[in-house]
Structure formats: structure tokens, C-alpha cells
Length: 109
Image 1 (cartoon, rainbow, N blue to C red):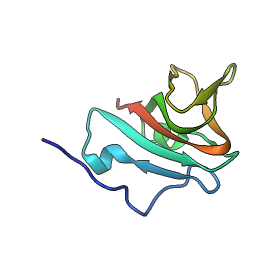
Image 2 (cartoon, rainbow, N blue to C red):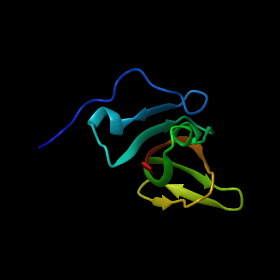
Image 3 (cartoon, rainbow, N blue to C red):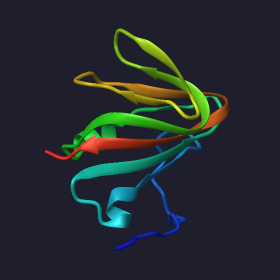
Image 4 (cartoon, rainbow, N blue to C red):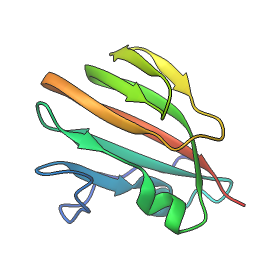
């Protein structure tokens, strides 16, 4: 069975001017939470909203642009086509001049 949809026009901003969709709910995915985040130039976002719902952000897939993924002790450069995993640390993502689009996968407890 194939499920597909266009992302809705309503959204939750992860940062000033950014857009975030809980795509797993839109598509009916139950095993994990999947969020689509679009950040404008030089923006920062934290997946704290997911954590407040009991979800554990883990995998970041960069589908456009570039930026950084930072924890309390480390910072990694990201660009389109890269995938990163964070385990057990709070984190933030920061976009560079062209902005960044990221698919975030989070474990459901």
C-alpha cells in the first residue's frame, strides 16, 4: 500500500521564520516520529517540542542546504545528502546562508 500527501499549509515554527511538520502523523507512521524541518538562512532550531511529547530525536537527514548539528560538547558540519545520529544528548541545528531542510526521525517510547 502506498501513502502520499502534500504537506499542509499549517505548521509549527521551530525557529524564527522556519517551518516544522510532524509528517509521521500526516502519513500514519506509528513506529517512529518523522518531522520535516525547513530553516531559513542563519536560523537555529531545537527538537525540544518532540522531547516534550516523550519522543527521542535521533537521526537527522539533510535534504537541502547546509548547516551545523551541535550538542553541548560537539558541533558537526552538515550539507545536503548527509545523515547524522545523536544519542543521549540535547542538540540544536543551525542553518547557513542558504537555509537547510532536514528530516528528523525520533524514537517513540
